Image (cartoon, rainbow, N blue to C red; front, side, top):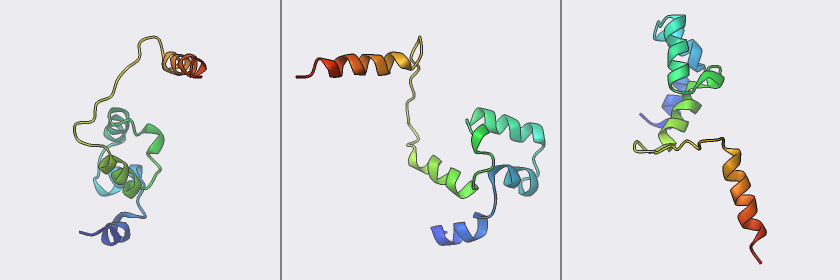
Length: 85
């Protein structure tokens, strides 16, 4: 199926509408999917856009956690940039 066909078939659906009305999942199941896939803020986005986002990530994507908060990375980068002549 090409992108134009996918857009025509699914472009009008939000993630939440598709999961609840088409896939016939319960509200609890939809909330769980949103939480586990980090889609809570994107439930009203087009399901086509979300699928494109997932397609951009490789299957072996590796995510890291910074103990103490992400600002440690920013502060370290800022400090390193100040030493560049």
